[in-house]
Image (tube, rainbow over all chains, first blue to last red; front, side, top):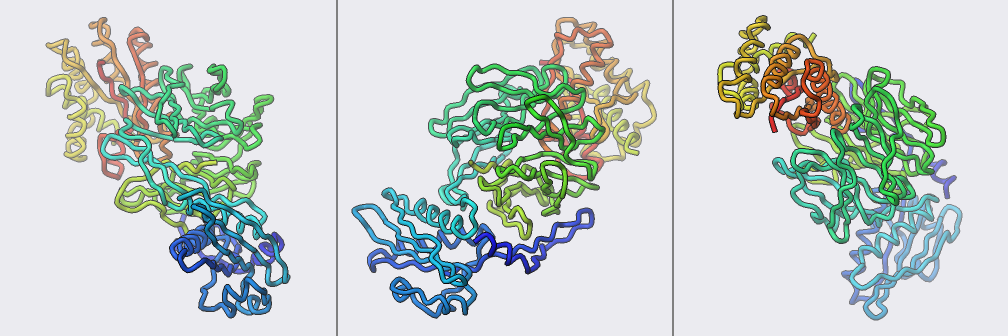
Length: 420
Length: 174
């Protein structure tokens, strides 16, 4: 199926805004056309609607799919469950056909799903999933994950979660929600400043930077219990924590040595060690998914730029060379690219660059853009964007295109962090 | 290019401090911001007298009042210009005359740039002030530093007049 994705890289997608300072990356990516149908017993019409809508929304919002209007379908679900007439789906341009049969077994909703490729007249996958009681959205996300993976070869991310910070006056709350905005809840209240939340690899804890008594500290916040534990409260700066992929370390920027350097906290021995040694600012560490490198921001050559340090021998390489202000690196979970924020003449852009510094792509500009965070499969990016004093969290595909706000205009939202 | 503007802001701030009682400096900076650039213009070009009034105010008839002062910086810089140095000389003199006092230096940034990088920049500004005071003979153990990055702007608008006031380090007694 991957070849089909590549074969379809034909149509152009124009982003709505073209900025003067940044040459916005133009991807030829075109989403797969998906025909999606759900059948259920008549007394399960609510469940049917929910599963249908959540899966459709998941797949459309990924921009890897575009669901076809059911009015264009030549066959109905009953007929298709008995026999797939591939030609009827080819005529309406369906790259992928997915059909789902729901039934209730006790309190549990069960889904039997088939995914077809009409252009190769082929069944691609068949699977059965069962929901825990009252977890029908979770079941829908799991179905979307399997359809996504079957069609693209890449794991889906639809059961993931998002954290972000909402500032109100001088205080800040930590907000949790499903990746599609459902199940939103305030999990931490009234922090005095709250910055840089980062999920532990098992998604159970969050490392964050807050202030207590007007002094910054690093804390680990337990999402299940709400318990907070301080693990960094040195003189000066305690900032920008990020877990290593294996959860063994948390990298952070501390300044107790008299200068801001990257240090590593060992979560088992609870000991710190200094990683960078340079008279410039070194901050915002981000780990490569193999745990062998840390990319960070440093102004060691005069302006803030992205560098990376190899943990085995301390070798430092400069990653960004274009522009005079590049900050906030976030290493893709796929390892190949690093997202960052670029600034030119007071315009900001979300960009990605290959981990070796090549192929810089500016994805979106306008407004004050900050805090890039990748979806767990490396296909989508979250960021915050402030326009006229209103800060919201947005989502954009890693190949660019139209950005989509995922928080409302009424309440402040910043520092998005996508779970693993 | 921005040198004039922020040094003026610095002088305006210290002149205000000189005119009023110690302990109100933070509010005065905010007043300066609402008064806009005109007041800053009128107080420019008088560095020596400005810093002298700084000594008077902070040296204070009443030593128990919390004294606070601000110095200002260029964009993405932690360098101390002559205006900032005059203010710090005055503060160093007061600190040496009041050896029991402890201070914290709070580094701040304007809203431009990345918030996380600005945390480090605010820290470098605070550290730069601390290093200067120590060179003037103030005991390093009496000085604490903290950075608020761009999280606590004195002036909440946009534009250079506002940003210049947010790129600052405040000296506060704790």
